[in-house]
Image 1 (cartoon, rainbow, N blue to C red):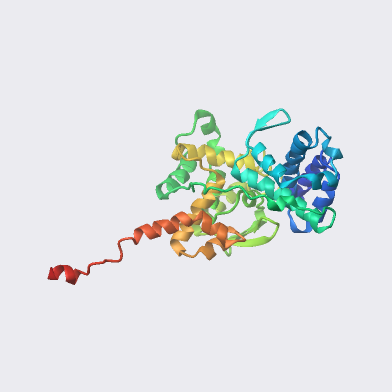
Image 2: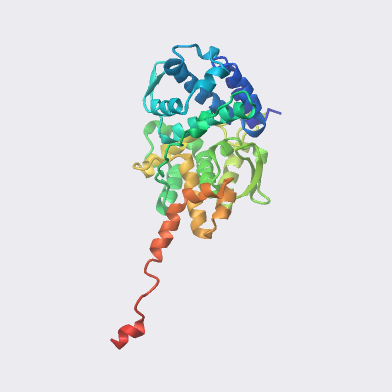
Amino acid sequence: MKADYYQERNIKNLDRIDVLLRDLPCFCEDFLRGVENKTSVLTRLNYCFDLRIFFAFLSERKLRGKAVQEITLEDLESVTDTDIEIFLSYLSNYRFRGKRLSCNERAKARKLSTVRSMYKYFFNKGLIEVNNSAKVSTPKLHEKEIIRLEGGEISSLLSTAEDGSGLSDHAGGYHDKTKIRDLAILTLFLGTGIRISELVGLDNDSIDFTNNSFVVTRKGGSKAILYFSEEVGDALAAYMAQKENDPRIPSEETALFLSMQYRRITVRAVENLVKKYAKIVTPLKKITPHKLRSTYGTALYRETGDIYIVADVLGHKDVNTTRKHYAAITEDNRRAVAGAVKLHKEEDQARD
């Protein structure tokens, strides 16, 4: 049997971490090892990307060209809170490996979080005596506009995937081969709120039609059972029936959703698939798989009014994350009841 998708992904990311560590100070390996038991492989990979930029900045601006690999814990200790604030400002417009780049407020906050985690680790270990990163304020994060599909747009998206109307001649040429798969993917997003990584990681045996349920691997590696409606079940069953009758699928391939090369579909391919149909239906909205997830979360919250149920189904560890994303729905409710309380009773008006 082929290796588990998530296991394969972790192995690839561990190899990438090993490569990135070659260009970082040697103590970074100690840091990553120290946080291994409480972080995912993907988190540690992102730490490496962030630290690569941080140490390049220190080498250029603070340590007078000292090679990144030669930076020591003593150098780390010499960095002031003002230096880190300058680093955050530097991220607005910087050059890295010949490319001009810019970070928004969320990217800056993530890089600061990475730097804080590293300083905290070495401070707690007693390897540095000061932790100046703790003195730096997190950049203010402005609320992002929540983009989602509305009722009519949802049915139009599914209809477009089904009949291919509006597709270019080139895309239309492939439509007959992929429409059942594409419809199953879109229906699963819109009917369960599944994450794109969870969808790509599904295997054939993840689906249980007896209970209309499936098993997903959540962020962090935990397993969860999600349930789907008959509508979602019909779309999945149609796709799986098509696969059963296709002799070109390798017998050892366990992935549920396949590319046209009969391999597990990639995250990028799913993103392009959603974009292809969405730009026909809603050309002014930038619809991504995550926006389809938000669409489901919005519909579920409107139906239940229970933020805890939405958080549980979507796999949010912190209900405040869910509340932040669906605050606009609460505002809709407030607006709807604005005129519910009458200051002048009807009998008072009749008396007048």
